[in-house]
Image (cartoon, rainbow, N blue to C red):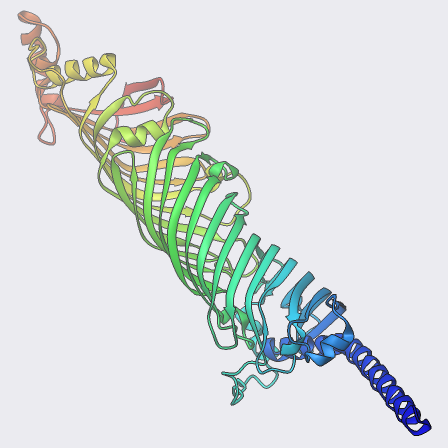
Length: 533
């Protein structure tokens, strides 16, 4: 080999070594730049996407197990890097007085290095753990957007710089901040959440599993979320369907049972219109314990910023009794808890259903019940029974007592009232009852309370102290029969009583008496009143 050829070979070898060395050095430099580039791209995307200040404590990139030279030669295509981040938070511009919109403890995703310079940059999957979402009340809107005027969308809004195709979230919490800072925020735990097709200006499909706080139970929901409203996150659209299972009503004062509900909802994060059905097969009052099946169909407007819930007419069935309820749970004053204001209406119910729910043991009476009442629970401390307020009227038609002793006494009363004390064909008489009542501070006031059987009518007014089980009623009794006919006597005794008949014939009655009722509900005491109160 000639000297000249040797020199050429040496020169070519040196050039090749220099070229390969340069490629390796360039690949290593490029590899080191991937991490800050991905970090900067993530910050830029989140800042623009949510119009927020973004902080990311740490971002770690694990490069693919591929030579840097090959990565460079393939321009990154097929080289997938694993990215892990910690301590990500998004906060409103200049608003350190509010919690971050979003706080994420850990996140991870994979990225094909060859797509980093594409538009849009596609990320197939992002996983997050320990996510907190804080939604402020609408009152904060002017302070969030600076000038208060909405910003025009950029011309390339339809071409996002990053397209995340799927997000998986574990251990998340949604918190809706109240207008009144002294109140406890509304919080809901989210066990898992999957979001699909996450693009700018596009509603995301979601599949979520939640744990409801009160009553405790499991919720599974699917639907759409977004597009995200950066100026006012509470205005972000939200729709879906839900299944609410194994909700324990025992956490509430006075009631118990396991609730199951299904339905759908539309609206936004801060305000939702919910429609659905709910069933409680074992609904009961704790102090009584008799289970009665309860089912409802409902529509409600829920304001997450203040906890107000407006019930559009709720159609419900208790046992076999149908009724409707409307009203709401409202905060009337800023510094007080919410109050319950409802109207309940039973047009034609079964009295046994109500008595089975309200009283221990089997129902003592049957009949048709009509009830219309206002129900109020003001924002006071103490048990619900002490706060409950009622204002309404009721009517019982064709009532019959199911306890033979009581019914036997009423049959006897009806026979005497009709002047036929020995007529055994007067049997199983029906009772009619109606009244106007108000309940406050565990005291029931009857402005009207009437009870009638064939031949007799009792009209009362007064009070019943529920806490002390104390009756204090005054009223009148009208009998169809005269005094001489009421007594089970014959012969000269009956003729002697006829002399006093005119003294008691008043107000269209054969016998008119003024009475009082004292004692307890279990042992009432009846007496005559000889002077008009």
